[in-house]
Amino acid sequence: MFPKAVDQHKPNHRLVPNGLGVIYVITSAAYLFLLHYFDAAGALPLAGCILFGGFMGLVDDWVDLRWRYKAFLPIFASLPLAVQREAIPEATKMATYIFGKIDFGIYFYIIIIPIIVTATTNTVNQLGGLNGLETICPSVVMIGLVITSNVGILLFFPLLIYLVLAFLNFSGKIFVGNTGTFAVGITLASYAIIANNEQTLLISILPFILNSSLILVNVFFFRRTARLVVEGAKLHSESRRSLVTLITYRKPLTERTLVSLVSLLVALSTLAAVAVWLL
Image (tube, rainbow, N blue to C red; front, side, top):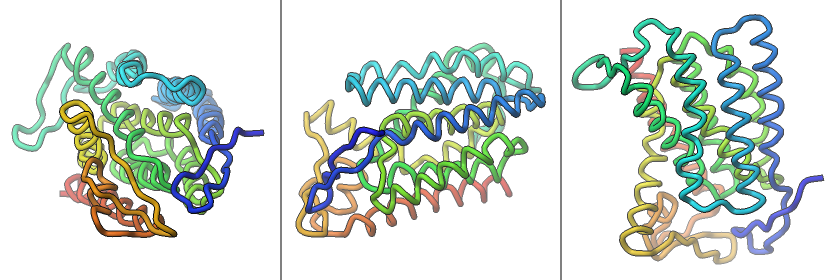
């Protein structure tokens, strides 16, 4: 039913069903449409964003979109979020660490929201390529967002579905593909804006931001890409051009150990975000 992709980081390079992120997209959208029927605030724009992210990822899986399109297409998803945000008290105010809450006025809609959506969607998409990496890490961030907001019902079922996909992905049985990574990335950004919870999102995705920064600096300034070397059951790297190559730099690790370490980093950043919220 689903197309198969080669598991590049396994010695036998076996074929694995790809694109199962579409299950997350369809079931999450159906759940949110149901909540909208019962007048749950924010359900409809979140469903629209997930469908947009899933469609964007599906097109990327089919035709391999150029990076410039992937970088800017999520901006369109910010339109329904801006409309939804207007209904929230102090809609244009956002918490900062040094200056407290700042009212960005109209710039919150035309600059801040598009940046949050675009940056989060693409950074989540870039931290992938290993079994479990693109599912466990976003799931951890999603848990943090649910804990630190009062509209967690919007994410209960999407989180449950993605955790199931994370288990199957970590076991090496499926890939969620770009359909899944773009959809879950845009979920995190959209939910944070709807719940007025951007501070938790920012702290939680710091490992994602570090990974994307390393990748982009090397690509744009040095024309070099990150690469993992497979030796038997272990992976290592001779460069430091992404988060995973930084961890495996001249230090061979199994795929599961590497994914566990990166997931631990995301768990720590998310825990820090929850601690900031509590304090």
